[in-house]
Length: 194
Figure 1: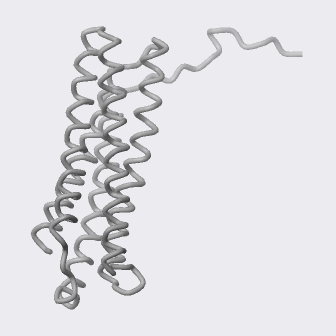
Figure 2 (figure 1 turned 90 degrees about the vertical axis):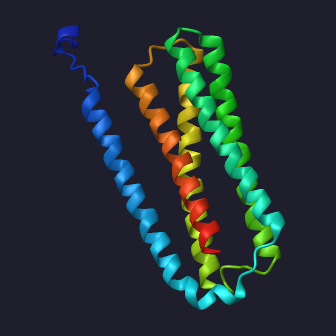
């Protein structure tokens, strides 16, 4: 019979900040390449389909409001991080929750926008370009849902006063801000192209 492992026998994995940051940046590079591929494909298809696409003003307004909500969500996360650094847990939790709620509102806005586009006859089955637009938006939405799950995990960690390494909080912020910037670039791309 072997004895139970003692504390000295357990291996503790330390989080190397620089390696973690590099890993996140590499992941961002992969996500950027995915969206560059999507947007390039979208642009090449656009020339053939441009005459058939007319976006109502209300659709542009909903898209603009939705984008503004995501930007505010990113700002709220930044406030949460600052409060956490000051050991102000209550305000950090409030700003984290605000950031997540605004992220959910952004997703609701995107779903409403997709429904409006479908109601206007812009369906993926009838228009390849619309299919690409839905693919781009859907892929971003999947990344955003992942971000919301991570925000929920972080909120729980802070709420229970578990030890959260500063680099983890920072990298979660990087991801959330990255998704916001990525969406803003996609949105501007669509505004210019369409």
